Image (cartoon, rainbow, N blue to C red):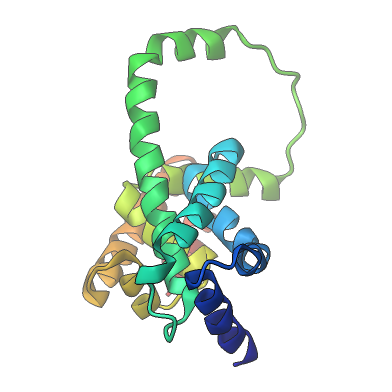
Length: 195
């Protein structure tokens, strides 16, 4: 594949200290890294920070990367690891300021808006995904939203394929239950039937 060969050339240049090659990799993969971070965090600012830090790490650890391997799984692994780190840090901060956050959200007023059924279903599904444990949420995002195979997800996360399959199975069960509880029975059936 031409792009993969080009990636190998670029990563070899990054390994030799070529910042321009890092810029080319950044332009090529920034959308994927950002999209993955955003899907997990649901926070645009945090995702931008993760995007920047991911490529700082690519530069910092390029010498340890095997340039004969595809770069995408390595980038996904960096992104997911950074996302977990940021989420854990954020959760600790949120726990410290939970009372203040509740007060702010209760006092804020938003104008009512009309939301189409499709948009509402997307919101319900996103909330249900966000309600999953991080381990299940990550495999759902990588497998269904980023379209990685089970073996690719296993590689990115450094876990067995059977573990990925198990997490996907349990995630689908939880999603079905969560969506059904919100009154979207038809949507929950579609989610559960996804293989």
